[in-house]
Length: 116
Length: 111
Image 1 (cartoon, helix red, strand yellow):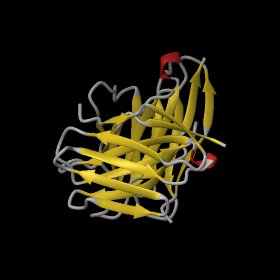
Image 2 (cartoon, rainbow over the protein chains, first blue to last red; image 1 turned 180 degrees about the horizontal axis):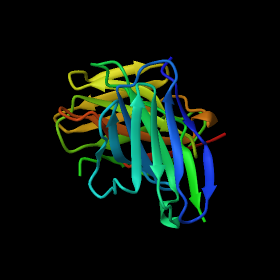
Image 3 (spheres, each protein chain N blue to C red; image 1 turned 45 degrees about the vertical axis):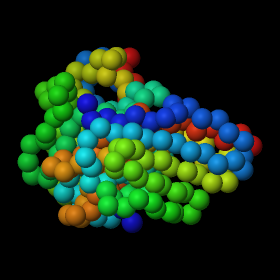
């Protein structure tokens, strides 16, 4: 149980275009989902926390107008990178937390974004 | 920053040897978790230890937690080549839903 999927697993796009990444909890309802960014050989940096039906909470330094997050249902959150630039190239990972009182987060397999 | 630090940054051992990774953190925590990440992949949850626990085992994994020193260790016994990966500690704190990740240890197990 507790499987989280991400789609696409990798994407290449041109500068100036927008890319949408989906994160789905497959067998549980995720009240909270998290979006992380990871540069090569570095740790995960939290970008934002999203709760179903409410606005996402962004970490300091993360542009909310550039990284649009929508958590429209208890099983789906999306991250849209708008007007992508080469410096947005990174590995984006989502995680989901389900049951209240449980600390574990379940991570998606990640999405490799390359902006040319 | 609440991000933890892991030591060593990289570790290379022979198959069959034990691997020990350490994690230090800065604030009071509710729990500490260890995750594994294969190159270019997502994270796999390994083990969770709560702040009132001192040691936990899961298969070949042994985790200790010393809240007085704000540190934890992950021991992998009888390592295998398939254990090659990056290992991250992550802390959960009161009032925050998210986890704070350590800097990670890259483990290489040589067959």
